[in-house]
Image 1 (cartoon, rainbow, N blue to C red):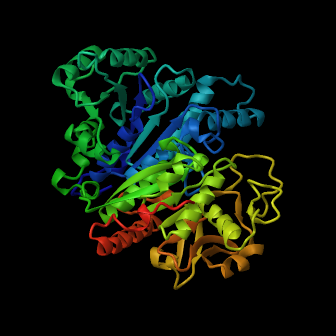
Image 2 (tube, rainbow, N blue to C red; image 1 turned 90 degrees about the vertical axis):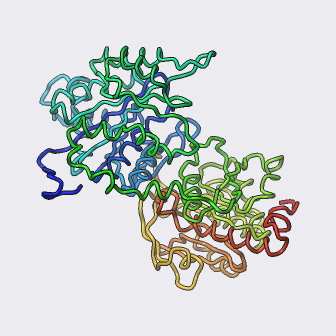
Length: 562
């Protein structure tokens, strides 16, 4: 936050809060709307943080199925959280902690533990005030030290599991000064069959919100196109807000364009005015413009990258696809991610590997799809296709080499095949007697030492890196020497743990036990992903020399069985 006489900023003003709720349906993009608002406030010179409220009873997202909830995003402190925290880290370029994700499981566990410890002095423990007080405490503690805290409430207004949170926010607003709190409601504005923008869903959503005692200060309409003037006026009239408090958030080609769209709508200016901080902001001409420069950078090349996974759902691999996008922004490459179903490699999905310039095998758990991932690794290894394996992808690269180069036919991970005679991947020390699943893996940021004169050293341009982990199993050190003799180089390690692998005599074959995608940002792309695209660009250049097109005679078009 800019301080001093040139801004007139008074630190005694304390934190400001923007609460973002959603109506009509989930998945509208209120998280992106909230993150975009935060990005613009940061551009204006404010310290911004974010809190995601998830009204489910899980303590964290660590045990949740990706099909139901998308990817589990890992924070630097090891917190396993909702994927929206990933959006906040990417948009704000700030590291969050577990405290920035509030779940019903966390809240109720705290309240019940306090009751068992006698903290409430014999009083009857109730939703109000004990649960709502704990919610308010968590929000305030997460906001400490920031100028503005964006708080996104998951789900939609009217959901029974979200009621304690909305009540807590109602109380919160009465306890703070009016200019310190702003409520933003994100709602759907669909089209009718006659192409009319319909406001009735928004009206009913706001009516539900007002019945709880909350009046939105701003309404953001999600629609295919910008809201027309008549639609804005109608929403303002029936939802009791000024017309200038109704904003459009239309569909865009890429989510990183959303801050630019809502900036044109002047949502950030309205928020700063309502919070009484407009006079503390940097003048428009002096605001940070790096975001616009990065996300509008022109591309000069294209690359098709095969993403070989088993969760046929985009949100399950969000950080991986975003990291590929960040690398593309950095290198001027338009990356097309082609989904390859690892569980269907024996059929048509195997053919999708042909014609791609790179292969990425991401993380995952369980045995389903692992044989397909091993096949994809073998294809990349044998045909010189740039390859990046992440966590489980790293482990399947070890399995593939053990099977097809060392000749250990039943080599596998003990996770997938407990009876294998060659457990080249085995449990971490101290994991064998774990009774609980949640929060018991190797989690969060850990440092990896990088060997000099290796590809990893070239990629990171450093002798160490700090990346985030989420795994129980690791390379069995009993097989390290044999794997090394077969051509695998373990170029990164943490004590006796193998953290990075690469292959000799290959354009780019890299695996990481950690998840580098979790630290990738627009304008600060993850080094292994940038290295992957550098290898692709080098190969495209090579093929352009060979056939004059860059697409004709390279490995991408060879019809070779895996």
